Image (cartoon, rainbow, N blue to C red; front, side, top):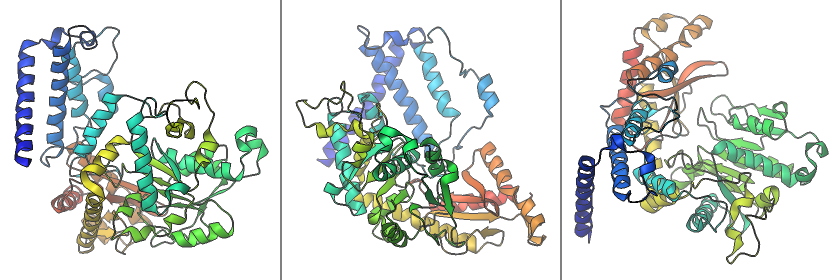
Length: 511
């Protein structure tokens, strides 16, 4: 069966290439326009030719993405893109352009973008390019439907139910006690967490607004994500009422009351969830865990204990587009109380959510959300889970953790690198400084910090201009600019880690 399947695939691949070549010869796309494509009459061949050419562009880009010899980006400044580059004009025209020009535009768009799937792209928490996930995104775009009702998204709404059930189980919740929805990113998922928490305590807010409420206060780790403050501003709570709780210097652990738990985005430190849950239960506080970055660790039997206590949370944010490597965007808000999400957001729009439909309207999930239109973010995750299995995700995540340990041990041995924290990393984040030779002779203090502050930006600027690698940097509190290395890219190998260290030394030694 396997041999037969392989042969079929090879034959199909040859046919696709042959068809593309034939269609390209027979069709002059310079004189063809979008109006000539389906659903226009007798345009199947032209449509096929155009889409095959697009597929060829994408396949060529994917091949280059995984090649370490290619540049991560061909950097240009914003004003250069605005002015136009080598025939690549971003301005919009009143008249249609040919399909041939559209293909050129597709090629140039990828050419001047960033290859986030490149093995040496370490810049963001969401990185890498999963081919199965990519296929899922293509299918999603082809289906082009909305997630608000089973009526128009029957398969996708059931898939969402199955995925959410799986995530509840992994956290440690029962299916009958939990609820959730996929949302457009972790910041919106955190917004949902705060929104539902407020509704649970003060359901009258939905009708009467903020004037009916006392002053509401949120406690958040000082290393927590800025989206909590944004949510407070959006919901009328106010950023002055977000109280930042001091963290332990070594690892970000909260030392006093902290009902809003966040894994440190920068340092990758975990908060003591059981201790926080005890405080929340004693004082009847809502506990929200922002596991947008760290949630995927629950899939690892070796490391899931780091999130022990998450099962006691009232709500959880989990972004599969980060550690699990699902293409952007894919985020879920999970609530440990059935019906609360819908009660908070339900408006019963009569033109969408009729109660007398021919099917079980429990699958019309749109009234749980603050959106009406909702993109299908579940299929690519579902397809990847089918492709990898839970064990495949576990192996992927364990490898990231091992890479982080390897990177940490290499840096520990180097005189011109200094770790922000001496302890072994808790997660895949590794924060460090690079000291050029001239700075090693300057005593520790204000003068050295002023010079060190400039090093990471200068090294990164050269990296970007040369397109060799991408890594993030930032200051934090009294710590001047340092590099933040994160491992979430399945294409990264130890050789790429070694390359990054050598590249930093090459670019920084004379600074």
